[in-house]
Image (cartoon, rainbow, N blue to C red; front, side, top):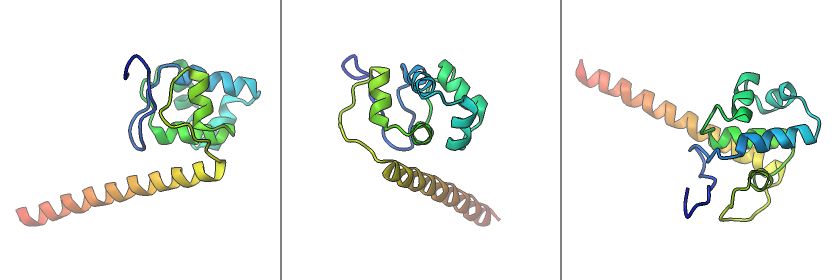
Length: 128
């Protein structure tokens, strides 16, 4: 919270979840799309989406929310607006740009996991 307003965080970190889950559920129900369908499109489990919508997952990752937004066909700005969250930058995201950003974030996360693995292997070699 900054100045009494929740803000969406940057890539790879959790997002302020105040109202995010309820907003996602309202949008999904407004479009009359099943939870299972959105979860499959977003490539997350039904249980994960259900927990996010119920507010049981307090800090969903940015990439998870972005995947859900893409699956719903809405921008992150629309989700933030529905949740009553003020955002610092007002820029609409096209579905293609959102998909590219998701892939970029996933590649960065995979690269970081690979680097950590290499670091552990190198440490093991030094200890021998």
